Image (cartoon, rainbow, N blue to C red; front, side, top):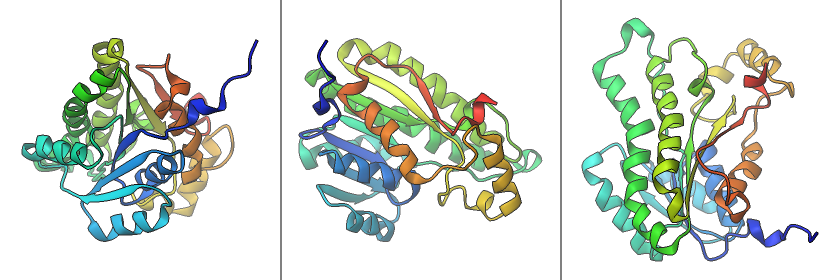
Amino acid sequence: MTAAPSHMFDLTGKVACVTGASSGLGARAAFVLAQAGARVVGLARRADALAKTAASIEGAFTPMPVDLSDRDKTVDIAAQVMDIYGGVDIVVHAAGLNNRQPIDEITPDGWDDTINLNLAVPFFLSRCFVPHMAEQKWGRIINFASLQSHRAFPDSLSYGASKGGVAQMTRAMAQAWSTQGITANAIGPGFFRTELTAPVFADPERAARNAAQTCIGRNGEPEDIDGPLLFLASDASAYVTGQVLMVDGGFTAK
C-alpha cells in the first residue's frame, strides 16, 4: 500500500473566493488558502479591514470591498470575482451576521438581514460559480454552519434559524451538484475568539463556561480552523460531500 500523497492538500493553480475576509475566521481562511497556493479574492464591506488582511498574506490575494447583502448585485459581484483570475474553484462563505435580538424584540428587518446574509447569499453566490466548477469537473463549496445549527442559544433565534438552514442547504447543494465534481460541505465552529463573538468573550465567566463545555477544555483559536478548512478545500476530501464538520472542541459531543 502506498503512502497518501502529500500533494493532495496543495491548492496551487486553484482560485478561491472568501466572503467575510476582513476579520475573524474569514480572514484566517483567506490566509490559509493563500498559504496552500491558491489565488484568493477576499470579499467584505470594510475596505480598511480587507487591506489589513491583504497585508498579512504572503501570496496572491486580491481584496474586493463589496456589500454582499444587496442581492440585486450578486451576479455582477460574482462576474467581477471570476474576471480577476478567470474563474473560481473554491468558495468559502464566512460572512455572517448575529444581531443578538431577544426573541420578543426581533424586527422584520433584523430577521431579513440575518437570513439574507447567512443563508441566501451563500446559495445565490455559489450558484453563480457552479457553471465554471462544473466545466472543470472540480469545485469546493464550504459554508459556515454553527453550534446553532444543532442547538438553541438565548437571544439568537434568527441567527440559529439561518444556521440550521445552512446545514440543510449544504446537503441540498451536495445532492444537486456533486455528480459534477463539486463537493459542498460546511464547517461548524464552536466558540472562537473573533469579532463576531466579542460579546461572548467580553464576559470571562461565560467564556469559561463555554470552554468547560468542550471535551478539549478550551475555546477555539483562529488557527484551529486551518486543517479542517484545507481538508474540505482540497483533493483530500474528494469523497466527502453534504457534511457539516463540527470544529468545536467536542462541544456538541457532550
